[in-house]
Length: 231
Length: 285
Image (cartoon, rainbow over all chains, first blue to last red; front, side, top):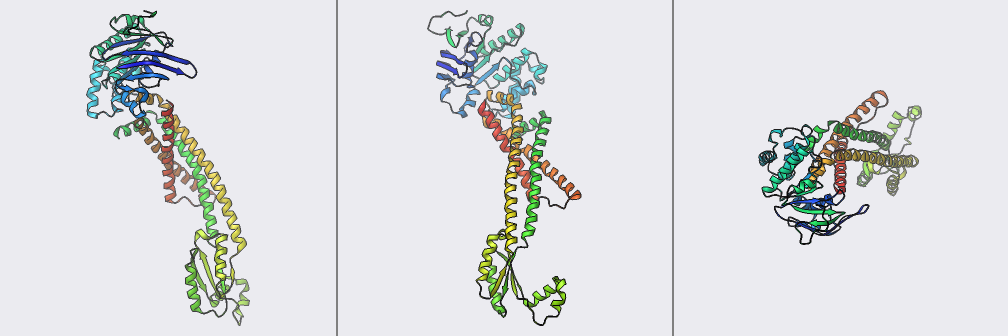
């Protein structure tokens, strides 16, 4: 479903952030992209949701060959993805339910369908009781749950999470991670970039892709034997 | 469309101060342009009222038949430059001289023979009241056999032409400079509003909004701000005009059509400024 083939991403000033990366995330998987900061985790995710285009190589996401997409097709691809960030990326001047509804409104969803769908995902993330609260009135973990609800509301084929627990305390981290596992259990693939190896270890069946200085040094689903993976 | 309207209203509601500031900035930059416009309108009007006096007078030979004059008048009136032709008979010329030239009243009273010739007074259409056209009409009038002499005050018309050219050139340059400044200020103001919402734009994109969808509320916001700025600028100009009129000189104000054009121009500037600012922003992220 997400397939990287010899993908390189170079920036004019900082050089290569990803070098000949090849990996494949399949439907329904829970995959981790791990590595130290600067290893290329966020770059890999940015290439998936088309915030960037690769310098070389091929990125395929849910049937789209991203290198050959017209600008008009990009929003269509993004509507099939759910994206969650370390810093939540919520609109501060809107309530939790307005933030979630926003993702439906901008995609032209029917008005009558928006309310029930928003409540369904807020219930799923355990925030139905705080729907009318503003982000500043919520804890970090709760804000991340709102962001996850927003990412889920369009029924994505894959949830991309870039260090989703990076700003959270241990308890909130466990809660958010469990939520992501539940979401995965209900059939949505999850691709999570993280440097938190405890989380990775807590899910032994997960697909692990480890990056070092832009290169894939270990892929638990790959045919090649591990080459000095950090685990 | 409802969502676009709601988002536009939200933009005003969420940042009332910035919105008011943008409208005021737009209003003041248009107001400065409007003040210049008022000066231009009044200079134009003054030159126009002087130019109204531009007239070509063809003095007729004595004994020219009235029939000939009538036919020729119709011919002259058919010139594209000519607005109207008035025939002044010898008697009318004398009566007018007696009335107007009071200091020579005695001389005109005791005349045995009327020395004044009959004439055709030719008034030109406003567009043709300049030296070149006046000279051309005079040349054609001279070609009539019954015309003795043609006068039109060449020096005066040429001076008027020069004045008009200078006013036109200064008006264009200063007007363009003011318009440019207004456009830059309005563009910057709207760009600030766009930057203030760049986070929202980034999130909209991530959840799959099309650029067209993102652009629409900004365009509407720009149109509304520009139009409100235009209305405020016309109001400010009206206030300034009233002040000038009561304290300094009697001046003319814009016609309703010109005022409406100012408001429409404000709206269009707001729209164009938004289109540029959002387009630039969307390309850069």
